[in-house]
Image (cartoon, rainbow, N blue to C red; front, side, top):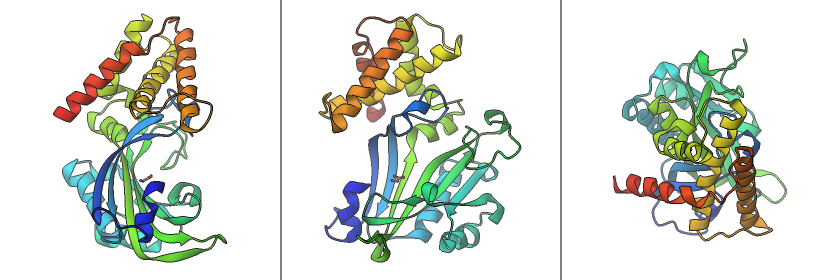
Length: 296
Ligand code: GLY
């Protein structure tokens, strides 16, 4: 959460020491996987809770478990946890305070379980995974948490922003450690609704159905066409939210991301035989769905 770095360092005073958020996020790092897996999308809503020098690892960890198991009522025997490889403090909390068995906790490297963007505040992460069952997996004998398939789905990342990365690349301890968590709304909705992928969550499925209608195509009748339908469904969401936030297509930065998404969706539209300008047909539907969600 790069824009919040001044709050993590104490350079700026946050509106409150404890904050919760619902953030619109665009991430295109995995764009080639969108439409091909159950869990990737370029647009998602991230539900966050933040502590700016207030509660820390022990509270954030216990509250995440309480929310997952007592509020959402996810069965404990389908939950797994990852921690950063040398974060023994997190291991102690998960095992001794929360009561998660040690064999359900996986230690991961820097690429997966350490949050940092350039210099400044950063720290180890702990992630919660849900086991969607063998039938959703790759079937390989070594399939486990961290496998690239869709069986074990990561739905919540707890970032313990406790270090500062200095100019020379060394890490110092922040005087007041922070918490920054992010739960993927689409992923947790997939789990809670017991559906196959983020594209079958009720709100997203409504858009997917409309895309199928415009393409005059029956979903699940051709694997390649299904991918195109899902790509368009995803990109419509990204593009609509970007434009409504004032971003316009251009050759650089965010504008280029938008242009790329529009072009990809148009290309997939052509693959489906849609040759007219089809985006506008979905925008009103999407806005109606969001409005209904907000009003409810
Ligand atoms: N805000 C938590 C994350 O970016 O994973």
